[in-house]
Image (cartoon, rainbow, N blue to C red; front, top):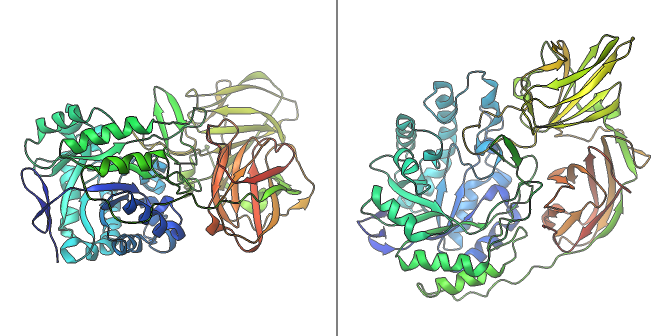
Length: 581
């Protein structure tokens, strides 16, 4: 059995001074087949600890249904780290931010019309309690106090950036302790007065999150914690990307100089990120700042020491050189680039139009008003709203109030236009012929907000539909999580007009990683052998999707694409190199 504590200056591991040199790597963003490889590379860089968030929304996809198997095998991930001789820091949330869908909170919480997140709202706390009951039973036996690798756990996450409910923080602390968590607890916040005042509790160890100006940040931390070890819990050595922006890059030597500044001050550090990985499926988050909705890309490369595919970048070696000034580096072979494969071009001849395939994807549900998807027990994907409108009616604005997030609008099956959450109530002009028309609105959930005051981000049409000044009532609603596409009636008909699904099979003999490029395609989602690789969008900066070799089968593989607009020549390419620009 071991101990991990601290005195007025240092962390203490089994009573001896210990500097935490940690790297963030989220098990849920990295294929399980790659865990050992990435952990080895973390240790070889000179780190002694791995840190991970816990994604509540994946572990409890529906209330009371828990999963801790396969890629969600958190306990096994921690044991993998232990086998590499690494310690572990766990940040169990319940909220994690992380540029992850709803900051890791499960979307089904939002079915409650009165839901209040990250505070002492009783229904929210009841859900947290059920999650902690299941999660902490997995984690408690792995604490250092019981011979395991877990050194410490975090209480909530950057709470000073959100609220000031100290009773809520105490409730979480008490919940951890009551369920057998006896390791060191800590909080992490930005180095500002308001964040450090409200993000922690007096007796809890405080850590800071920042990317530069280390001495200034630690000075502010000392204003609120005069004694105790200094630690940067999130050293932002890179950054994430939003669709429609440039790929973020930070000079390796600039980031290494900040690391040197921290270590010279005697501080501990956790690289956020050491290895970012991928927002597979519909799991990307979003920001909402200044009335602008900004969804995060599928890639979470983060310009980290290991890139999205797990290869070392210049930062890896720059950081290792700095670390070598302060600690003895492990005598391990340094990682090299892993082999990639270029499978080549593939034509997707088989297709089925969205409206043709709709009966195989969803049963309609009747609703008086077009409610958000959470009210139909749907978490992710798309949702279709359908109604009929009598005519004739002169041309007036068709207004989607509080659209979340992007809609394709059809009249009698013909596309009228595309609306986005760029303004609170986007609109287009619509006239109705004498015999009336059928109105279809296909809405994409592009990722819930994961940071800031706008977390209550229900998806779909959240404020009603107006034709002129008249609300439209009585709708058929089709929830489209797109979890099973196996019943779609594909035919060899090539490119179709409007939203459609496309399919191809191809042969491979190697399970090396590759990158899927979609030249000429517009926007959509890709599945490989039934696994959701994530979203693509010609807007960039991400122009390829990472395909882990572990998802490929030796022999026949299936690729399915849901394209919302035009597929170009219906050709994709599997390349050796990623394209992030």
